[in-house]
Amino acid sequence: QQDRCVLMIKSCPLEYQSILSDTRRITHCLEPSISFKAIVLVADLSKTDGFLRQYASIDIDAYKVALQKIKDEGLVDRIIMFDGQNSSQIVELNTSWLGRDCNATHSSQGQHYASTFHGFEIIKELDVYCKNDIVLQMDSDIILHCEKVNDGILECIAKFDDPKLVSFAFPILSTTPPQTSLRHLQRDGNPCRFETRCSFVHLDRMVSLLPLQIP
Image 1 (cartoon, helix red, strand yellow):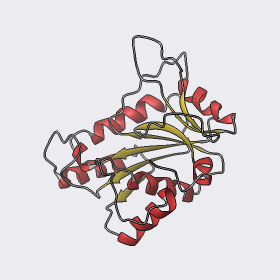
Image 2 (image 1 turned 90 degrees about the vertical axis):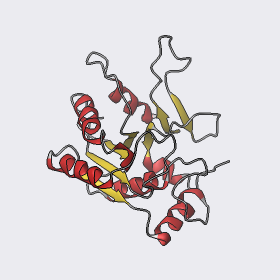
Image 3 (image 1 turned 135 degrees about the horizontal axis):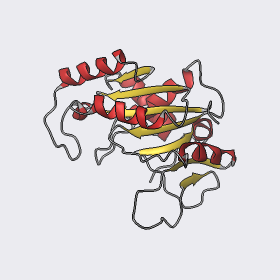
Image 4 (image 1 turned 30 degrees about the vertical axis):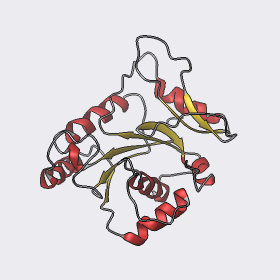
């Protein structure tokens, strides 16, 4: 199980003050538990202002400086810059993944998605990527609690031995036990929840379902 997971961290310029520390935190938290085949960071520059729940002004230059520091420290194997300026590329992403002929990079409510699809496609092109590899994709501000005595990461990866499992998310931290420990999307169409901010994805199985059905 140690050799079948790729970590994809997702970021945008709104996080220019925190992306360096967040990347350090995520990698230092997870790597003692698992040896990732690759760690990639997707930097979504397709939107530089007017973010959903924007809490600060944007400093693109400071963001790029932070990305360079991440690269210099060797925290990730690759930084994927996605500027959303190639209209034909965006249309192709939307057509392939959603069956929609449009050049949007964000949903009508403002959530990003095109950069995530682009990140998935780049991962599939990596030399280290193999069929049946798992992707752990997460926003850079996600906070994980990993116990050394209970390795939840490897437990999650092992769940993909079920050939119907496409993706699932971590249970949300709570003082009461969740009704189900793993919330997941299955190929048989059962009601489910796909957590876009942080989830495990069996990439080949997800690609086999394209275009994804959306409301």
